Picture 1 (spheres, rainbow, N blue to C red):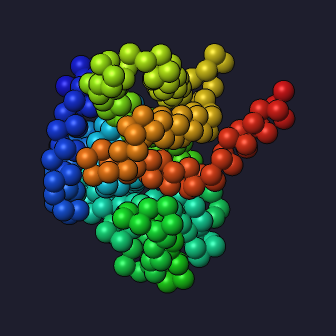
Picture 2 (cartoon, one colour):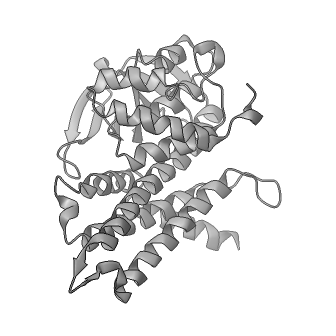
Length: 318
């Protein structure tokens, strides 16, 4: 089958079933479920057990992971498998034999890295080397210090790299491409999480009756839902647009898309919890899990610093 015969949205439909199955398993079993469905190796080379598809095919898969609030480093594993290219390590990720995460802050040169999701359960971690490239490290050689400030149930981790064992190195162009793809997929994850919250909220507003009328009949509720939908569509359009070159055939900057997606997702999730009357913090409507994850991603990219830097760069370019 050629790429022309396969559409990204078709992968999303198949991925949703595998992700839902993975959520009922333990961490290692989930790896096998996701790998057997081809999700871990969707962008990896074919001779390493992957599908060798472009990042546009990973996009809807990660969005589904966001919608279903998957607690597993899916986008990290599939991107690292892609970046490793012909390395035998890529096959281990694509097959689910190994699991990799990514420290979004710090570097090997600094001997400290942070904001790595699910570090304790992962086998490998990717960090910047401090010179423009990246290094894949064996997690067993790293000291893990969990940070539960934003999420006590699924904490981020700071990694002390004094005795870190390097398994593979990525050159600067490969690591730069990986960072670009990573920003796109984080935006997709956040947008997917917010989309699920909006769908849940719209359904609740349509069925919750007060004073003889559904809540969705109230104009204030309609206005808020309309604004939430507008932000969702704006984020989705930006994510899809950044995949293509601009009018001058140049690669588009992913930072505005990521900053916008994180901000919009946080707004939609917070308003969803609000419209549920606070039930978004309960077991029956666990929207707070998605909000925590979005906030963790925002912190990893500077907690608003990304948008400020984009603004400064724009002003200087004019």
